[in-house]
Image 1 (tube, rainbow, N blue to C red):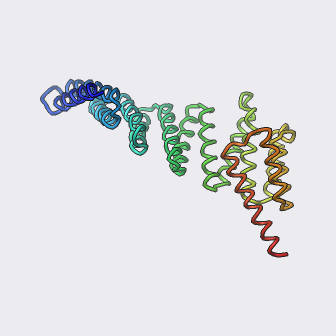
Image 2 (image 1 turned 180 degrees about the vertical axis):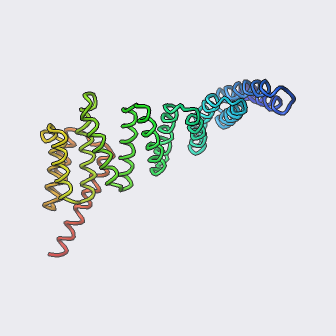
Length: 289
C-alpha cells in the first residue's frame, strides 16, 4: 500500500512538473494527463480515495485544456466514484461537473444516467428536495432519449419523495400518469395495480373520503381488472373505515393485506400517517360527545 502511494506521489509530481515546464501546448497536457491517470490508479490501489479523486480532477482539467470534453467528463465520474468512499458532497460536485459536460456534447443518455446517480446520492443523504430535482432531470433526459422504463423509474422516485415531503397532489399526479401510460404497454401492464395502490395511499393521507371514493372510480375506469384485485380491496376497505371513522377496522384491513403481501417501508410510513389522520378525527368526535 505504502509503495503504491509513493508511486502515485511520484507520478503526480512528474505531471505537475510537465504542466509548469516548457513544451508544446498539446503534448504538455497529453503527457500530464497520462501521468495523472497513473497517479490516480496508484492512489486507488493504496485506498487513498481523496488523493485518487484529486488526481482524477486534475486529469479532467488536462482533458478540458485539450478540449476533450468526453474524456474530462469520464475523469470527473472516476473522481466521484472515489469521493463516494469518503464524501457524498464532493462526489455530487464531481458528478454534477460530468453531467454538465455530457449535456454540452449532446450525450443525453450519459447525462441522464449520472443525474439518476446524483438523485441516489441525495436520497442516501436524505436530502429529498435535491433528490427530487435530480430524478426529475434524469426522467426528462431519459424521456427525450425514449428510454421509457428508466424515465418511469425516476418519476416513481420523484413521486415517493414528494409523498414523503407531504406533497400528495404531486405524488398522486405522477403515479396516475405512469399508470395510464403503462396500460398501453403489454410489458408494463403488470405494474399498474401497484401504481394505483401508491396513488390511493397518497389520497388516504389527505383524509378526503370523497376524493378517495372518486379516485377509486377513476382507477376502475383506467384498469377494468383493478376492482377484482387485493390492492383495490385494501383501498376500498380503508376508505370505508375512514368514512366510518373506525381506526380498528382501518388497522385490520392493513394487517390482512400485509399477511399476504408484505408492505414496504414507504407504504407503511404513509399508511401510518393516514391512520393518524383518522385517529385525530376520531378523537375530535370523542371530544364533541
